[in-house]
Image (cartoon, rainbow, N blue to C red; front, side, top):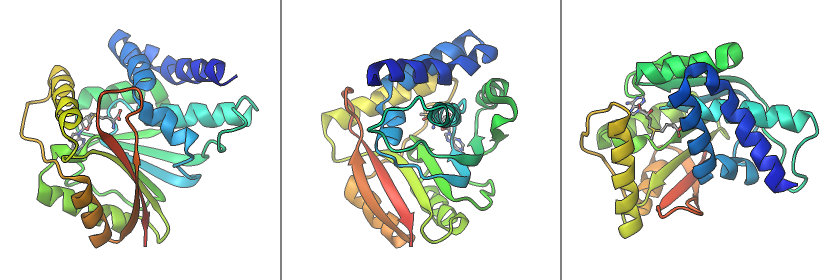
Length: 236
Ligand SMILES: C[S@@+](CC[C@H](N)C(=O)[O-])C[C@H]1O[C@@H](n2cnc3c(N)ncnc32)[C@H](O)[C@@H]1O
């Protein structure tokens, strides 16, 4: 059942991107299938049901499509019994720097989620219950990372959830390999190759605690040669 279900969820979450063009649709299929974070978030039940989830550096909005389709399948009774319930999110808001990605996200998901063009370093996040940042923090300076953490904490209530994924700078060759791939994809998607700002897992844990979070690390690179770790943080 689970393999068949995985194929159904992948196809359904990628399907809306047909409306955004050939590149967006194929990128959606490849990323959702190849990146263990998407299934991992559901299998581990990391995202709770919420009124408002914000996805900072959302790219073409894949997480929104993924969560919306997961919930639809769950509500229709088509859901693996061993998995936690898919979260019910009333409002998903994505923030993204690249205009083309915002266009693709809007073309794919219409009114099912909201997408704004902006920089996470200077855009107001508003209030939220869940914040997700997948593979974005290393693009902004160390000072900006800390300011974003501070503003995320301010946008969450006590007990609110913040999920992010980082590369562990102490992770040796897999860490350097994931940076290399990340920079290649970043460049191919039209960004300038600027400096990146990485930290060790221990450094990340320390600054999360300093900015008012408890945090649990969960390695999430199964099936890839990378060294990626999901941090599951709760606002205290
Ligand atoms: C590796 S992609 C990840 C996209 C998405 N989070 C996902 O997992 O599919 C990084 C994204 O962060 C965006 N980004 C980088 N710096 C940003 C910033 N300062 N503000 C908003 N978005 C940013 C990039 O344009 C890119 O879409």
